[in-house]
Image 1 (cartoon, one colour):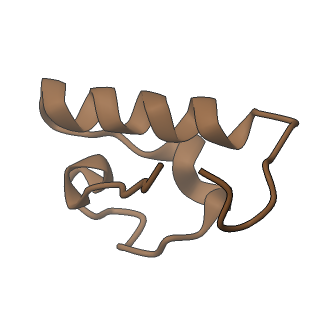
Image 2: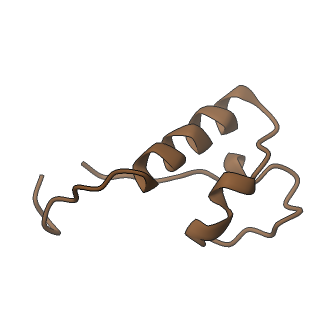
Amino acid sequence: MVYASSAATYGEGELGYDDSHDIVEQLHPLNPYGISKNEFDKWVLHQEDCPPFGLA
């Protein structure tokens, strides 16, 4: 699986446009697409198991 987030998750950019995992919970996307991407970002970050790099 190739995973990519979207600039739509950053809202108005009040927290910047950094890929830091520390701000994902604080972002306020402006549209349904951004909200869905942000929800998936949060879900991914809460997963405990991670397959080895390159395993698909």
